[in-house]
Image 1 (cartoon, helix red, strand yellow):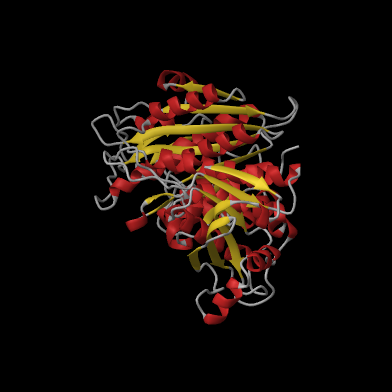
Image 2: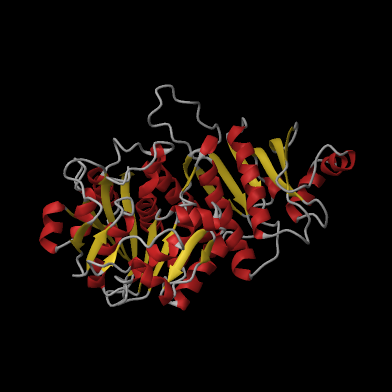
Length: 496
């Protein structure tokens, strides 16, 4: 998709399709007034006759003759005094969806002058351009790598986004939005790839390819022998039952000054989770290929950095393993020494994500990080608590937690903070080791984060539980690309 910015008057811009916003109530935006004037009052006539609606996210496409545009796509944007950022995103998504299934090869999108209420960081024209760029990429996503009969691709190849000007700030905002959408789609590609293809070594190859394609990315991969020598016994314990050996993948982006501390991202990369000896039920087990959603979001975020090249240092660490049962697999009751030196009694081999993450969280201390954020499809309890709408957020630092929550609000990739009180820590007490890897059914998301917090005491740290947000089930099954928008916004807020 070729997405560009234009500041030309819409009547002076030719396109197969013009996209405008129509409010349900309130004054029309300037682009809609201009379009109506060029069409001799057609939009007003259609609205009066009830043939088009301003109800939010409704769409109507009309053929035109003797105009710079062959078609007119009208998207309802709701009432001006009730429109929020969420309503705006929904309207843009509806417009993109209509373009995807329509016959147009190029389009002029005039929706940046549709305004809504909220903070300046969310409502500014640059913010609206960022939203449009991201949604255009996100909505045109398809995953057909393993289909022998490829469906016909969308005809639309170019979108010009109309804006008040064409300065650097506006161009950069649109570029960042497009890059974020592409990063989300890369994350979705990795997540949707079947587990017989996507295993730890394959993920390591993707990291090497990212470094090969982008000079600003440096990749290092630690194999099982190197991890054993270092003492990363919990990552190795998770991978013992699989023929696919685990890997620790390290990607570095150095866009800031050499003295600047890096921001560190840590991703859970369980490429398939059978539960190990603590075997999962068979129903929906195929979706356990998405248990590497945390690592996939790390890859997607690094791709955005490589495309946009902000002035910031970022280190990404992926702890990749496959959790399978066989005669060599870790058993419930086994005790393992972590890289930190603390010991863990493994009571449930299906609580494996925290085991690969704890060694990674110890490992990243070497980078003297400004902050560490880990992403993991960690607990089903998070889905019970928050459903599929919000990511669970737990942190040992209030400022970091608030920054991530704010990034989620700005992007619509929302998170909700849960407590990390000391009272929960006792649920991890073990009779035989320093801790056990499960804390029972109560507060399962919190006790999982309590476990991780024991390995993150030396730096500012936050944990994102994306079990409910990394993929969709049912008819719309597939990876979502979350929380790439949240992560990108957070990192960009710290770029020089």
